[in-house]
Length: 196
Image (cartoon, rainbow, N blue to C red; front, side, top):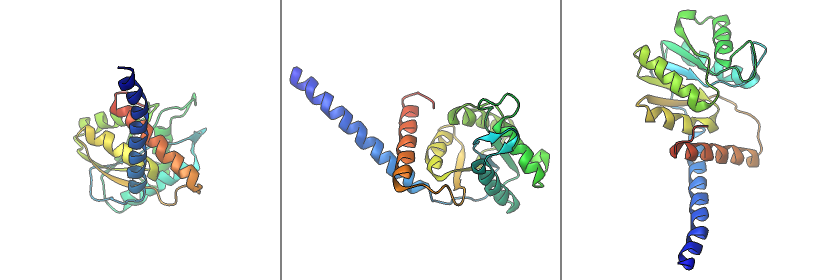
């Protein structure tokens, strides 16, 4: 019995590590795939905002969503993200204000202003989509984020196309690998019922 327990205690971490590396590779492959096509809504994943102004990352995501909207790929843009510690502004509301300034009609923008995590924002986004009778989306975020976001939305029966923001951030190969591994861990946790 001790031999079996010893084998399991060695084999389990090896298998888990292998699974996370497999997922990280899937995430890396998805991170550069452009799938944007006709859909009901463009979902923009939130990122930091600074006292009512989008951070460079959020602005890049919003600009990419704006380009897709201007190409006529969707009737609506849905901005997401909660306060993140800001007592006045939310990422979703800042995204909406920015898009209105860029000429997107306010009635074409839906807002999810409460999510503290990706999973919470996506759950709320799906509720908004259901309420508005929307069934498909283009999801805009950084490339490393797309794989997990697509799987979470597909799990809720949403037809989803990934569209990573152009450029991304200038990261070293080690930093990129860490992001892929971190997303793999987040996805694996979600698979066992822990939303991050």
